[in-house]
Length: 175
Image 1 (cartoon, rainbow, N blue to C red):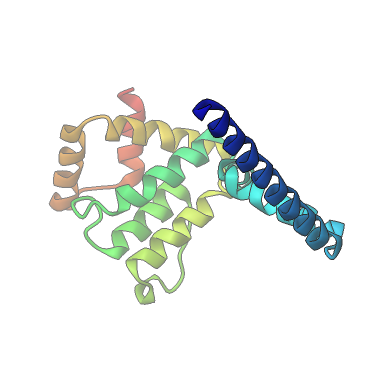
Image 2 (cartoon, rainbow, N blue to C red):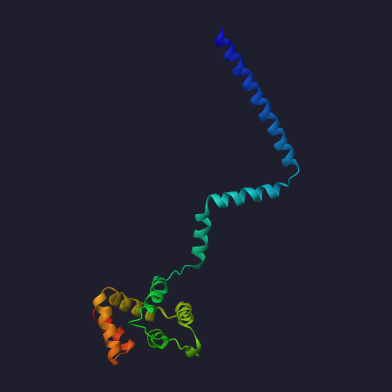
Protein backbone atom coordinates (compact mmCIF):
# COMPACT_ATOMS: atom_id res chain seq x y z
CA UNK A 1 0.00 0.00 0.00
CA UNK A 2 2.84 2.41 0.75
CA UNK A 3 4.18 1.85 -2.74
CA UNK A 4 0.85 2.82 -4.34
CA UNK A 5 0.60 5.93 -2.19
CA UNK A 6 4.09 6.99 -3.25
CA UNK A 7 3.32 6.29 -6.91
CA UNK A 8 0.11 8.31 -6.63
CA UNK A 9 2.01 11.21 -5.05
CA UNK A 10 4.61 11.05 -7.89
CA UNK A 11 1.82 11.14 -10.48
CA UNK A 12 0.22 14.13 -8.77
CA UNK A 13 3.59 15.84 -8.57
CA UNK A 14 4.29 15.15 -12.26
CA UNK A 15 0.82 16.45 -13.19
CA UNK A 16 1.44 19.65 -11.22
CA UNK A 17 4.82 20.09 -12.93
CA UNK A 18 3.22 19.57 -16.36
CA UNK A 19 0.53 22.17 -15.59
CA UNK A 20 3.21 24.60 -14.41
CA UNK A 21 5.27 24.00 -17.58
CA UNK A 22 2.17 24.46 -19.77
CA UNK A 23 1.39 27.80 -18.07
CA UNK A 24 5.01 28.94 -18.49
CA UNK A 25 4.91 27.96 -22.17
CA UNK A 26 1.63 29.86 -22.67
CA UNK A 27 3.20 32.94 -20.99
CA UNK A 28 6.25 32.61 -23.23
CA UNK A 29 4.06 32.36 -26.37
CA UNK A 30 2.06 35.39 -25.24
CA UNK A 31 5.33 37.34 -24.76
CA UNK A 32 6.64 36.30 -28.18
CA UNK A 33 3.44 37.46 -29.91
CA UNK A 34 4.31 41.03 -28.91
CA UNK A 35 7.78 40.83 -30.45
CA UNK A 36 8.71 41.44 -34.06
CA UNK A 37 10.19 38.45 -35.83
CA UNK A 38 13.23 40.52 -36.93
CA UNK A 39 14.14 41.41 -33.36
CA UNK A 40 13.98 37.76 -32.33
CA UNK A 41 16.17 36.81 -35.30
CA UNK A 42 18.66 39.56 -34.37
CA UNK A 43 18.72 38.35 -30.77
CA UNK A 44 19.39 34.78 -31.92
CA UNK A 45 22.27 35.99 -34.14
CA UNK A 46 23.74 38.03 -31.29
CA UNK A 47 23.62 35.05 -28.95
CA UNK A 48 25.14 32.84 -31.62
CA UNK A 49 27.94 35.39 -32.13
CA UNK A 50 28.68 35.36 -28.42
CA UNK A 51 28.76 31.57 -28.43
CA UNK A 52 31.24 31.46 -31.36
CA UNK A 53 33.53 34.53 -31.09
CA UNK A 54 36.38 32.96 -33.07
CA UNK A 55 34.32 33.05 -36.26
CA UNK A 56 34.11 36.84 -36.23
CA UNK A 57 37.78 37.20 -35.15
CA UNK A 58 38.89 35.05 -38.09
CA UNK A 59 36.81 37.15 -40.46
CA UNK A 60 38.34 40.37 -39.17
CA UNK A 61 41.90 39.01 -39.22
CA UNK A 62 41.37 37.73 -42.76
CA UNK A 63 40.46 41.23 -43.95
CA UNK A 64 43.57 42.87 -42.47
CA UNK A 65 46.19 40.14 -42.71
CA UNK A 66 48.72 40.67 -45.46
CA UNK A 67 48.87 38.01 -48.14
CA UNK A 68 52.56 38.80 -48.53
CA UNK A 69 54.63 36.67 -46.12
CA UNK A 70 57.50 39.17 -46.22
CA UNK A 71 55.28 42.04 -45.07
CA UNK A 72 53.72 39.78 -42.46
CA UNK A 73 57.21 38.87 -41.17
CA UNK A 74 58.46 42.46 -41.09
CA UNK A 75 55.37 43.84 -39.40
CA UNK A 76 55.91 41.27 -36.64
CA UNK A 77 59.70 41.56 -36.35
CA UNK A 78 60.50 45.25 -36.86
CA UNK A 79 58.77 46.61 -33.72
CA UNK A 80 60.67 44.16 -31.52
CA UNK A 81 63.92 44.78 -33.38
CA UNK A 82 63.53 48.56 -32.99
CA UNK A 83 63.11 48.08 -29.23
CA UNK A 84 66.64 46.64 -29.03
CA UNK A 85 68.52 49.59 -27.53
CA UNK A 86 71.90 48.07 -28.46
CA UNK A 87 71.06 48.31 -32.16
CA UNK A 88 68.77 51.33 -32.04
CA UNK A 89 69.94 53.47 -29.13
CA UNK A 90 68.40 56.65 -30.49
CA UNK A 91 65.34 57.46 -32.55
CA UNK A 92 67.64 58.64 -35.31
CA UNK A 93 68.99 55.06 -35.61
CA UNK A 94 65.51 53.85 -36.54
CA UNK A 95 65.14 56.70 -39.02
CA UNK A 96 68.53 55.79 -40.58
CA UNK A 97 67.49 52.14 -40.87
CA UNK A 98 64.18 53.14 -42.48
CA UNK A 99 65.97 55.35 -44.99
CA UNK A 100 68.77 52.97 -45.96
CA UNK A 101 67.12 49.54 -45.65
CA UNK A 102 63.55 50.40 -46.62
CA UNK A 103 64.00 53.55 -48.71
CA UNK A 104 61.64 55.49 -46.43
CA UNK A 105 62.32 59.15 -45.75
CA UNK A 106 60.83 60.45 -42.54
CA UNK A 107 60.25 64.17 -42.26
CA UNK A 108 60.29 65.92 -38.88
CA UNK A 109 61.64 62.77 -37.22
CA UNK A 110 63.36 64.82 -34.53
CA UNK A 111 59.94 65.91 -33.27
CA UNK A 112 58.46 62.41 -33.13
CA UNK A 113 58.44 59.91 -30.30
CA UNK A 114 60.12 56.53 -30.68
CA UNK A 115 56.76 54.78 -30.88
CA UNK A 116 55.48 57.22 -33.48
CA UNK A 117 58.55 56.57 -35.65
CA UNK A 118 58.18 52.79 -35.26
CA UNK A 119 54.48 53.01 -36.12
CA UNK A 120 55.16 55.07 -39.23
CA UNK A 121 57.83 52.63 -40.42
CA UNK A 122 55.49 49.68 -39.87
CA UNK A 123 52.64 51.38 -41.73
CA UNK A 124 54.92 52.33 -44.63
CA UNK A 125 56.29 48.78 -44.85
CA UNK A 126 52.99 47.68 -46.36
CA UNK A 127 53.64 49.73 -49.51
CA UNK A 128 57.22 48.59 -50.22
CA UNK A 129 58.58 46.78 -53.26
CA UNK A 130 58.49 42.97 -53.05
CA UNK A 131 62.09 42.36 -54.21
CA UNK A 132 63.44 44.84 -51.69
CA UNK A 133 61.37 43.24 -48.94
CA UNK A 134 62.55 39.75 -49.85
CA UNK A 135 66.19 40.81 -49.50
CA UNK A 136 65.55 42.60 -46.23
CA UNK A 137 63.63 39.64 -44.76
CA UNK A 138 66.44 37.27 -45.76
CA UNK A 139 69.05 39.53 -44.15
CA UNK A 140 67.03 39.94 -40.96
CA UNK A 141 66.48 36.19 -40.71
CA UNK A 142 70.27 35.71 -40.82
CA UNK A 143 70.81 38.51 -38.29
CA UNK A 144 68.14 37.31 -35.88
CA UNK A 145 69.20 33.67 -36.09
CA UNK A 146 72.10 34.25 -33.70
CA UNK A 147 72.62 36.36 -30.60
CA UNK A 148 76.32 36.51 -31.50
CA UNK A 149 75.47 38.21 -34.81
CA UNK A 150 73.26 40.71 -33.01
CA UNK A 151 76.03 41.45 -30.51
CA UNK A 152 78.59 41.84 -33.33
CA UNK A 153 76.24 44.24 -35.11
CA UNK A 154 75.84 46.29 -31.92
CA UNK A 155 79.64 46.49 -31.58
CA UNK A 156 80.01 47.67 -35.21
CA UNK A 157 77.43 50.38 -34.55
CA UNK A 158 79.34 51.57 -31.47
CA UNK A 159 82.61 51.75 -33.40
CA UNK A 160 81.06 54.24 -35.82
CA UNK A 161 81.94 52.39 -39.01
CA UNK A 162 78.49 51.09 -39.74
CA UNK A 163 76.13 51.14 -42.71
CA UNK A 164 72.81 49.32 -42.92
CA UNK A 165 73.20 48.88 -46.69
CA UNK A 166 76.60 47.24 -46.28
CA UNK A 167 75.39 45.14 -43.37
CA UNK A 168 72.36 43.88 -45.29
CA UNK A 169 74.53 42.98 -48.28
CA UNK A 170 76.98 41.23 -45.95
CA UNK A 171 74.15 39.29 -44.28
CA UNK A 172 72.74 38.30 -47.67
CA UNK A 173 76.16 37.03 -48.72
CA UNK A 174 76.49 34.85 -45.61
CA UNK A 175 73.26 32.91 -46.17
